[in-house]
Image 1: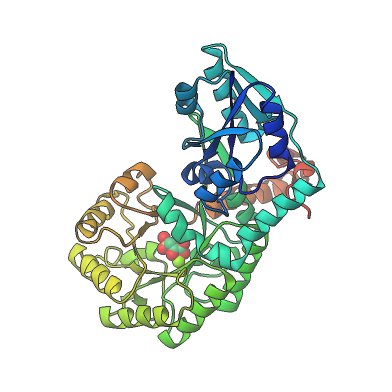
Image 2: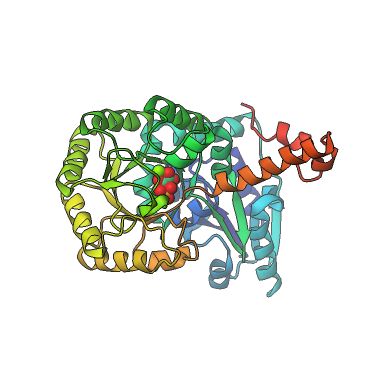
Length: 431
Ligand code: SPV
Ligand code: MG
């Protein structure tokens, strides 16, 4: 009996999958690989049912002879282990980022004479409806909110991109790249106070009020499914912060990060060039504890951001604050620095991890941008936030376009570097 292999990364069995199995069994005995959660989040969407349930679903399909785990997106290991005579897959992987996986399979099969069978992809109204329902589920507050905690468990490091509008949200949601044979995408989104304020032409001094900041969250949520980390600035008065926690939680935000500063907040990247006052450990610990007492679900995270290195108060101060904030109930620690060299951040992580193996660490490498995700992971970092790069890339390009239109008294000269009209009008999916 010939061996036929197919890999499923789905939460839901529909007629398309049944068709694949019925085609596959014409060639021999059908082995189905179920893609692990870790691999699924790198190029597909977050699984809405557990790995065990996905295995069970496939085992129940008539014509499946065995089910195995495929824990990498690329097929190298699974093909080396099974040496299947055939690999069967829907032909939707001939284009887009999935093409890299198809190319990988073809080259592996060629080595020993295995064959690839592309089955016409089933995409009818029913399949579309199932697909839309799954996206809807991921976008709902109760599912979206808990996803950050789940991702921290699944991913070596949770990659988070700044967003401040529906459009930037779509970029974080949909950008998938193939690089050195691996597929990758962002896991979560950061609603930055700096970029949310900048988009409104306002300074980053807690001037844009919460009603407006919540509106930004809604704009992003309407068109995305990924979890959101909200930059809560200082959190304001404790009496106000508790209301913010309730609202964020209800909206389906996964985490708020608040920084241990008081008085008129200035952006941390100014460092000691402007007057910035750090809160006392006692006050800030009380604010965290009050927030934790107020939240209703176990999913929501309050992350304490330590400004000691920014304000040049030293490593010991940073570490003792971290300890106190965790004791007060913080679900994570964000440590910030405006040095170019990542050394002090990595040192903090090493010292902190010696005493605390569990509390998630968050970093924002805007200044120390030479550090890689792999290095951060090695030092125990759980979440990396790319906090302002989208805004900083858009602004120069828009400004140049404005200048050139003024210079040439028409728009023809700028056109070649613009997104074609056809692409912009089809950028947004219609329901
Ligand atoms: C933000 O993005 O608003 C932040 C990060 O708070 S930083 O600007 O680096 O302080
Ligand atoms: Mg901020």
